[in-house]
Length: 122
View 1: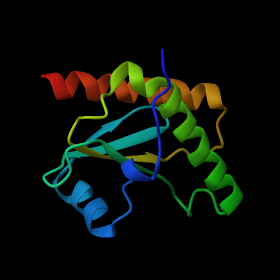
View 2 (view 1 turned 180 degrees about the vertical axis):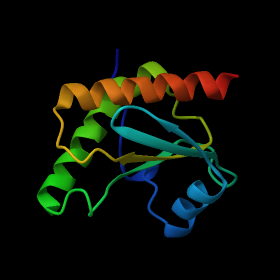
View 3 (view 1 turned 90 degrees about the horizontal axis):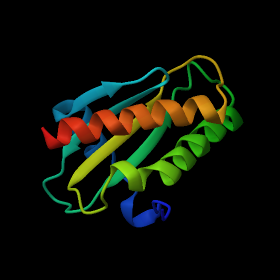
């Protein structure tokens, strides 16, 4: 199975677009990660961003590591659950106050992606 590509073209960076996801979107949660998503009006492909709270993880190195782990979990498992041609904006937020292992982050990401796939199809 080919890996799901994560690059600049499918990165969600605009603050107004991220705010629109929170304002108009829906939310799914797993044990460690929340997913906010909204159907995009402008874009016709999948765009996403990752966030880790500064209040729960004060060190930037820890926040960056957790974001890298979430990106890797999406890269490895995204092709199984997602299609790049979906017109959605996704925001993944790590909310656990503990620094978890890659395995538990990957399990949370898989359950979120499965929930998103089931919601999107229904």
